[in-house]
Amino acid sequence: MLASGVVHRVFRGVYVPGAATDPERARAQAIGHLAGPDIIVADLAAASLHGVSCQDPADLDVTPPLQVVSLPGDDRRRRPELLAGSRDLSLDEITTVDGIRVTTPLRTACDVACLRGRSRALAALDAFARGFDLGLTDFARMLPRYRGRRGCLQLKDLVPHLDARAESPGESWTRLAIIDAGLPVPDLQPWVWLPGFGWVRLDMALKHLRIAIEYDGEDFHGPDQQEYDADRRRALRRAGWSVIVVTKDRFSGAGLHSWLREYRELLELRLPESKRRYARGPRVA
Image (cartoon, rainbow, N blue to C red; front, top):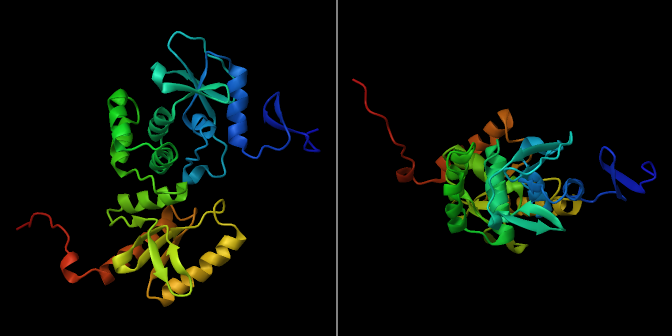
């Protein structure tokens, strides 16, 4: 049955009919049903159940463990595929998805944003803000709940940078790299007029400087889209734009340094001289 594709294995001894179109969601659903009513699906597994992708660049080819929690005093179920623990959740931080108890979108976004990995954290905040109409005030209201918890400083640092206009994790990762480099953050999803194309929308851009930064992800840019993007970018360059293309392998090491350096050089070239002044430290005699 496995070889013919009639069933698909999600855990040891756990199978689902057919090939899973969304493996992470299938895993979360399976363990949610197996674990029983005392268990609450949390963190990345909860994000999957809510339909939110919030991976870290290094996680694209790795299957993360499933995190489940129980309220203090409840029985914990243990399976090798799970990270099980206890968490102090209020009743309004628990909801039900597909008959499975899971942390609410707001709570899930904050929990994921506390996990190791700033890129994933911002991607989670962006995606939940976009998908569930959450704003800065919603997240600010949650911050006192996380005081003293591991990862709370990262959450507090990133909440002011969330932007619901980011349309993919890769766009969030790209924006965070710019933020962490201390460079001007481009506007998200701006529309520009392009000869031969009409009005087109860019991932990120500084329109007044004609600098565009776009993320190309395999999951979001199929062959037809890639051909269209290539034609559009050639037209942008003919119109005087500079276009920086970022892919998933350009978020560390030489790849990250390369496109950030290109962006920095473009800024220095196109900003008026009066704007290219940097703060100086105290003069040493």
